[in-house]
Image (cartoon, rainbow, N blue to C red; front, side, top):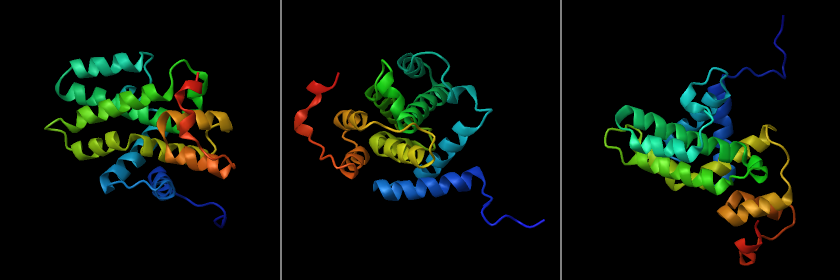
Length: 197
């Protein structure tokens, strides 16, 4: 039996590493080596069928999950904060189209994710404090990286131009601005938020 020339065997880590590296380049987002590895592992964890409970949406509002994380302490706090940050980043990046049909918008996830990662970056005994600081500071950029991966792997639905424009107005995402330009639309910040409902 011969190998099929079109089949390329890759582990999930190799597959997502290639996607993350190329997306970081396309989105012009710089990431530290450990942050890049963290993003690869994040994607690997969320595609696993047996993902642990702190990685999944347990039905509680994300704001409540963040509040409970901040009220806890020690290892439990770090696990909860990481769960909120990771969930926020993954959902707002990989499934950003979903927010156009939800009562909670992408700003909510962005704000909670940034806060969770910022809190983790200030924990003295956190080995990845620098990584979490970078994730917090560049949350929108990393959200764009995951959205780019989602688009390229065809796991997200096609985005309507108006939804991309609304998201661009809310977040200032360079990626969404570029997507609009590619569609022949020049983004105009002067329109402002007053037109977004």
